[in-house]
Image (cartoon, rainbow, N blue to C red; front, top):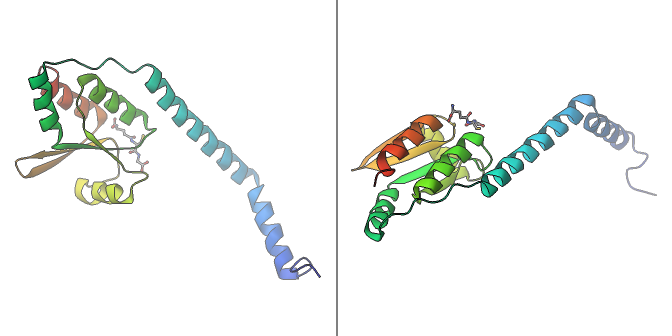
Length: 152
Ligand SMILES: N[C@@H](CCC(=O)N[C@@H](CS)C(=O)NCC(=O)O)C(=O)O
């Protein structure tokens, strides 16, 4: 005898899960998720093929920028368009900031929520003489980075 095939409880459970799986609501949800993932991958690809050139500095100036960059970290999601925009600025300004993935890395997510105050990316963590600032909003972050590094 095949286990569970004619068992009423198993049968009805199977029917319920299949019905739920193919309900219009679930199907729509799956389509939206797939579209979102596809769009995310497309954003990453377009960013990769259109990346701006890195700023070039004299060696000593670049070394100083790299020391400054150690006091910064960017909390972000890989496929978030606001994060892509911010990462492009970091790339263009040639500032190697540590990236923390607040979607995949549970520890980073917790830090962002508890210390920054909310889950919203991008968020730049700025350490300055023992004082920590959590800067939200891509526009504000990009302005801060340009102010601090564009003329170094
Ligand atoms: N105005 C903000 C918008 C940032 C934003 O909407 N970020 C989304 C990701 S694209 C977010 O953090 N969502 C929170 C979540 O998904 O939990 C900016 O320019 O930085």
